[in-house]
Image (cartoon, rainbow, N blue to C red; front, side):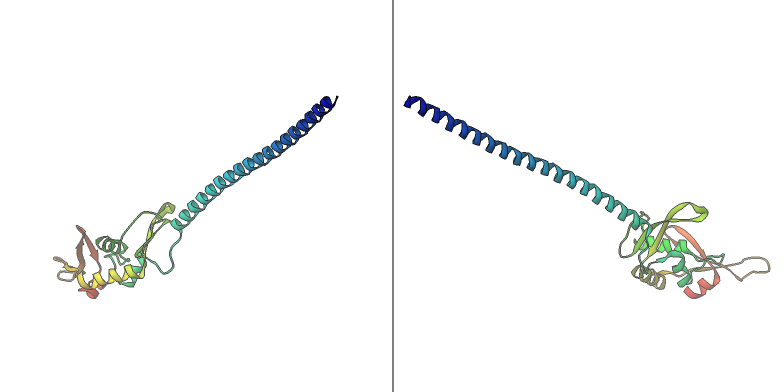
Length: 190
């Protein structure tokens, strides 16, 4: 009988220990499941954060395509300030761009910015979307320096009629293209 009581106690203790073991295992399994769920939530949040960051970068890029850096001027404003006028007495903005191309500071890629130019998307003639190039003070200084040193337009005079031997237009060749100017521009830069 003693033997049976001892066996009963051993079985009871084993059952209690197994029960404690299985409850400990269940507790650990619960912790592991919780950690797994937390990792999945963190991973999902990281993906959402990355997606949000990409959206922010995209919006910033698009914003830069529309925003002009303070202090930069258009080719039209530069032509006016440097007194560069076409034969029709309009600011010769095309010549400003040609000088910038010659100096290798010109770019037409929307959103491009450096110390010389800021290229933005804008509404142009007729309401269509186009590109506007804005120039920094450094670029304007380089253009002005080029004009002082290199820009010497040639005068073209009328050859016949009542206006014979009077000023017709001034011409200057740059980048294999001839640009024409009015008399005031010629007088300033001759």
